Image 1 (spheres, rainbow, N blue to C red):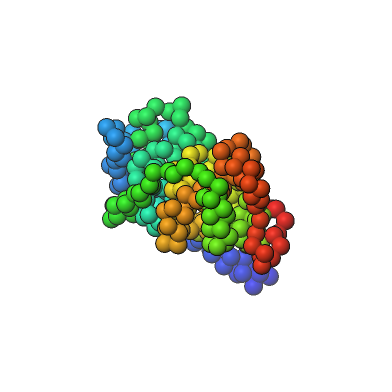
Image 2 (cartoon, rainbow, N blue to C red):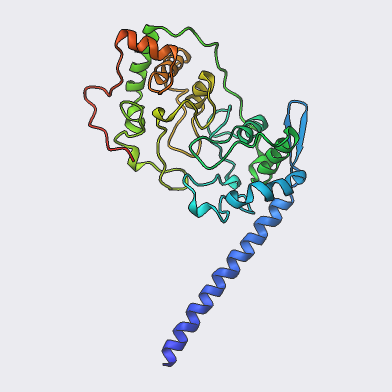
Length: 291
């Protein structure tokens, strides 16, 4: 009996110790973040102030992203994909090179646009000033903005005219860099690697399904699509292809990917006229069932 009581005391002591350590860590983290409440954002002529966004963040954002900005809000356990962990300073939607911080305007635009296929809605009803303040508040969660500057935005060359030759070339790029392994031979997000993918926090993540619509997580235009695979989506298995494909090839891929989507487009009409059909290379293994 005494041994059982002793073991119980040890377990209780361990639990209390862990709880106290977690509480102390949270306090220390909160104190560090509070010291960064002077953070600003600059979008055009707007200057955002982190301190001014505290109320807005508590009202609209804390339920998912958490008090500490770590993506552990009370709603997070029910969400898939999970809310962004701002403390890491890693963001999918950027105009800057992979591995670098986004521009303030990237954060501002993401807040306004929302993230398609996720629980992050568009916050366009907020005023521009409120969005600028929130962008500064998002920055204050990560010490990266104290020691690092945002990366250099990639250059997007003028979009060429879509042609049959470009669509065929785009299909070749799709096969050569093995986009189909994740996104599937027909772009349905059901490639042979799809079920094995995880994000930077080792959580399962699914590739984009081009058949779902005309919106991407980081925009809707051809230029947005070009930017996505030339910057990569940091924090996900989607890499930057800027070192693997040339700008002309990137445009070819944009046009080919448009043929995989359900809405009408010039690219899709040309593909129909020339009989271009999606598919994996002849040596490709059969795709896995869609998750």
